[in-house]
Image (cartoon, rainbow, N blue to C red):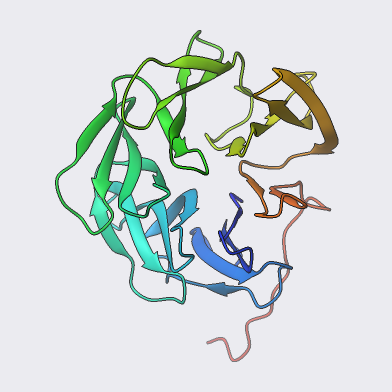
Length: 251
């Protein structure tokens, strides 16, 4: 689940439990080949995978063996993850690479990417992501018990405004929208009784919503390639069941 293209478009990071009980962070080529795990599973990946602007590092939220939830940074080539701060969830990198945003207690904070003192950014809201030019900060916050809206404000501070009135509350996970130049890609649910969803694009300049594709999801996560020709999402498994494995020389 939670797939993310690297900014250079060459790699994909995602969460998987294919090797056992706990989720791990994996990296593969953009076509899905040569997938390798980046951590040993001791820091259980909870999701919210996000690349650094130079495609060299990955930040994610995870839980250690003691059950503490925090955000961790790991080399995209592999290595030991470094915990940046805790408690913290849903991290994202600033476009200049200097800060990492994260959520804590329903608020948005940021911390220097190399570590340091945390700074509060938003009193109510989470899942923050900067616009590609680094000028606008997008984030979501609850507006009713059943739904959330997408808001935006200048990165340097200022008045907020609503971008999308209603986000996909029936789906798990916070990352079902991606800001790009001139708009936002997002997942919508035409019928909450079904798992079929629509990929839509909201044109900021003209205030129009366009439906691009329909598909069925199996988890959270949405990513758009840098050239905007490909999307990644977590789809359903082809079959329901379990894998059968053999253990040789078992005593």
